Image 1 (cartoon, rainbow, N blue to C red):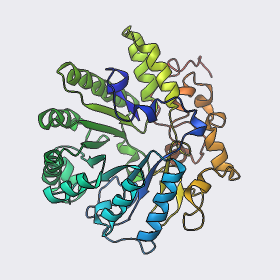
Image 2 (image 1 turned 120 degrees about the horizontal axis):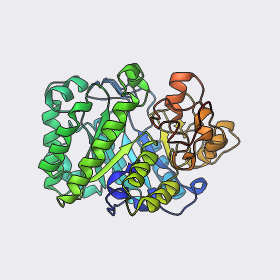
Image 3 (image 1 turned 90 degrees about the horizontal axis):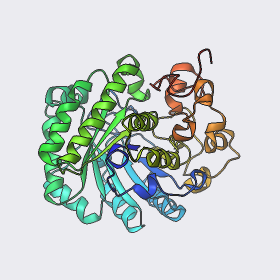
Length: 387
């Protein structure tokens, strides 16, 4: 995650200690995404989990979930993110949330918002949920088309209002593609109108049903345009006194791009931002971010399902995560040594760590190939002609 509001506007945010703390990358405990169920009440065209309307037959039980959460807490994981499918369709989700909070885990929910009404929002607040991230793909017609259900947009607005009524922090999650990039101005208008405190703009990852949308990913020129737009709108919000957290996610080229823009503008904090990006370390798959699927398998991140490292039914997550006898896990802990091509020669490798392995593999078949979504030019990354 690249916090535009933090880096460009100087905002202080709740997870600064995780993103920009001084802990060496190799010693980081991961934020863990737990896909609690494969079931979902929508069928989104870009779902990385290929969720459908029924649970998988081998999902972790309540007791197995409790055991997982206890292990994550003892391991020192800073955040548990309940995802899916749609996590709120699990009958025991409130029990799992209660266990997570009582274990000392910062507890976050990633949801489509369909099931959040005043009553549930109040219950989530009382349980101690720290944040609810609701997916939104555009204004009403666009969002409902993405989600495959008429009325989904109105449910999102209702869910946001329900969370705000009980002072439960809520934000939006928007995945950018050619199909909805022109909706971004409207999303900023909505953030301002409803005083939504957080918005995350996700770059498309070619995973799950999202793998069918490769041709709908932005070109490099379009990506630059919309990243600049997001930076400009973030600045506008902060100049108006609206301290909205604005982040871009899943393309670590955004960090160097922001730094280069700040240098060009003679921004007084450009070199400080460079150091913060270096501390952040860029892509953290297999280090600072991890995933447990509904069936207990452990992955390097929630998008990259080609390789698993074991199952929490057989070994604790903490043991699986630190087991560098697995060759791929060992390499992920030091991935900058193994990336190839222009990534290996890039002067911003310490800031980006080679970006997303899932995209590289999806397009080239090579885990360590350059991420095709990197939109920085050869000149910008320090390559001479012919390299």
